[in-house]
Length: 266
Image 1 (cartoon, rainbow, N blue to C red):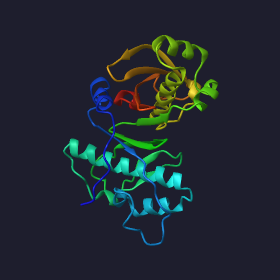
Image 2 (cartoon, one colour):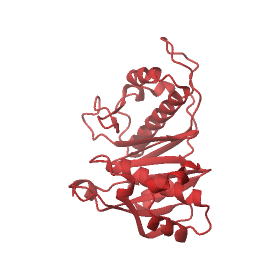
Image 3 (cartoon, rainbow, N blue to C red):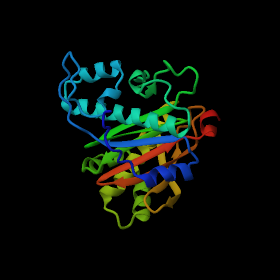
Image 4 (cartoon, helix red, strand yellow):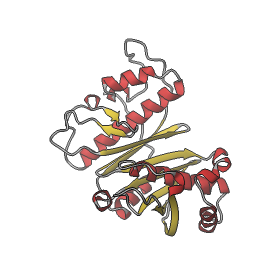
């Protein structure tokens, strides 16, 4: 049996999501990306572990990427998603409906990843979110709309700060994290907003400045519990606020957001 990559997702973040967000039906996977050769006509056996999980349509998409960086990102993201699907179905006692390489992670017209309905007609389709940044990729699978983001701490976050962080938020970040470097603070905010945007994209994705960090903020031993006000006023059925869990993974920010049933069907 093929040896799958080792999951690096922080257990404390996953447990906090289950405990604080009340979302027991979730699975999350974080993997390091591996180099991927150009895809020839015959699918080679020496590809990185986990490649056999891909659906034929996903293999076709992988082969269409000319840049090695995009191939590595796509492959790692899809492997994360398949492993997370298996983890969710196993933990909830449902079992796999069919082999993972028969299940396609497609994209809706907006680009949002979705689980293909083929073969899942007798059960609810889980929601899924995929991210990649730097050397890593991650996926989150849950029973309601969700978002995940990983972002490396890079100087460009400082250069484009005005696009996603208001002056009030900058002051609040300084008060909340007085001992942190400015880049670290901004990275946490960026990942939190990206995760929230992805979760809300099931209706319509808001802009960065349409999400505003609020007090109170809970500090947990290894992660932070942030509340973001949603300032989109002209879109019906959008929550007034969302909660995001964010942590540091090496020199990356990592955040997850899972909406509640009430937020989805209000």
